[in-house]
Image 1 (tube, rainbow, N blue to C red):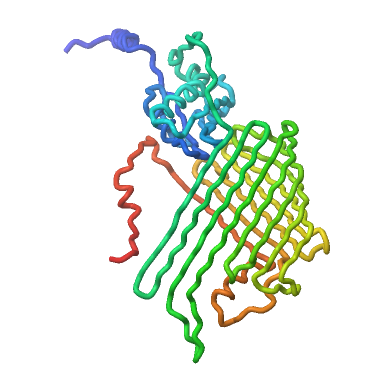
Image 2 (image 1 turned 90 degrees about the vertical axis):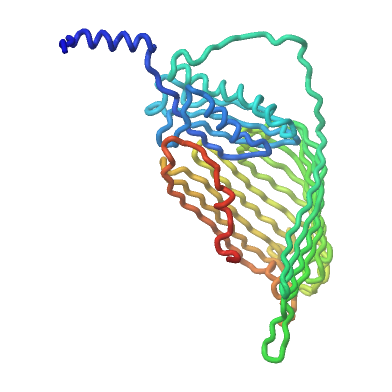
Length: 429
């Protein structure tokens, strides 16, 4: 066989390469769905990304661009926020470090309409990166829409109702719990008002406990009806005034035969009320009064009480790409006599992506309080003993989760046998 010179081989390879066109590789994108609302935006966006030949969905450790998806809700609209982030050192050279797009989606519309609303925003947020990473992949046109622009008809009013329940039955053990409620709200960009009411009841029937010759009934029947109302009016981009009211009633073993409270005050928030990521950094102070009627005489010898109150609340929820920090602090107190009744509570929650393979979630709730409890408890009454826990002076709860993950490098999806995975392996046989 005659030998082909090396120059001819190189020339043939160049001719094949030119015939096939210049080489390129898809833009590597990691999708980070941080919050979901009523519209399944994460699934729609993931499907659209998978359908693009010029995009490859990859794990976080291999991404040139990280696409963060957040959503907030108001009335019938989900506000979806898309934020693309590219590290200047390992991302797309010359591309912006971040680029954002917002889209409003009506959750009541059909799935195809919801996806059709999301796709243009997804293309816009990826365009700056695709145009540099995959030259020729993006074409831009500017057109003037035909017809006359018509504002959509909307209403600031909303109404919702809910109901649910749980039950279990066996020969000697029976349990049921149910709840139902409703709310009416009026929301505009400058003011918001809402009123709601909820009723719940839980019944548990089980054999009594016999201690010596004493029989202690373990059955319980608890119920409560509560309601509230909140109203606020914006004074500026950061300041607002408002008020809130609440009332409730417990069953005879609960704390309140009836209670009512009303407060009004002012709030300052560093972020606007329509921040696309739902960020909040606010402090509010309210003063008012409270009236209580108790089912059992408390440790202060009171069957009822009326007293002035104040409420100081600090709330922060910040999301910056891979880090979410939420802090809620509140101080409620009787104005006079001071420290006769007070409640200090703090809640801290954080979600943190530690590198490419570790996620950390931590939440701690703590409450320090002085609440007059019942003056006397029948130790043989199971329900009366368990229901008195509301007056414990210190309550602390905490959760943490540390997740190590090495995601599949091709980022393929497969939902077969998911239902089988959820079968209880310890129940029955």
